[in-house]
Image (cartoon, rainbow over all chains, first blue to last red; front, top):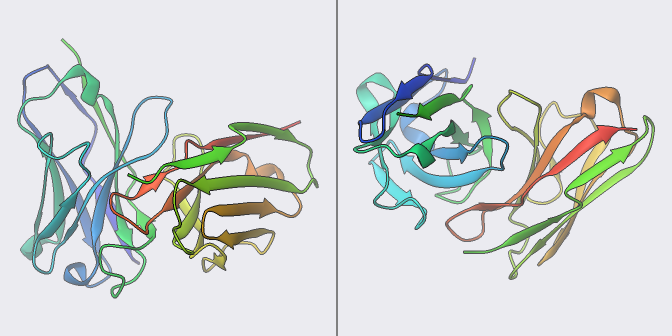
Length: 123
Length: 107
């Protein structure tokens, strides 16, 4: 079964660092782009960026460039989203999702989604 | 960034009704448009890709059409399990952008 399994919910204080994960299984991890999507409480979906685990090519949304770091470890088929200094405004559900095809380049639909990781940042 | 304007933002309909949601792009995106369904507390689910192609396993009551800047998503006969929020997404230009969502409720 193709699936993405995300790490569990996190509660952090402003200024702390955080790295959340998204483990892929059931498919060739290095062949499909994986993206991250933010959903603030009660709000819509925001595309943050994507990574191609095959060569670690990354594309960020300008809105998130410099605010987060996307990475992947091919050896353990896991993608990551990290913050060096969290803010209260980072409180949100974060979804990872896989591109539908292995030939669409960075432009494609997301067909497989993780269950989401809730990040709460509060003093 | 390409702006996606989705309407209506909310919609109340009866079981069996035909439901239509529209999405307008701020520039020509050809057919690079997807539709997702998100139920409360769940991850989004891909329903339609490339504007009109039905994802495998998705019921045929869901359909999509359009190209260029104007797109339509239709549920031909609303079922109780279709209660959700629906989003369009363009993937012609990075960053991908989503519409603001349409919350569908049963009347």
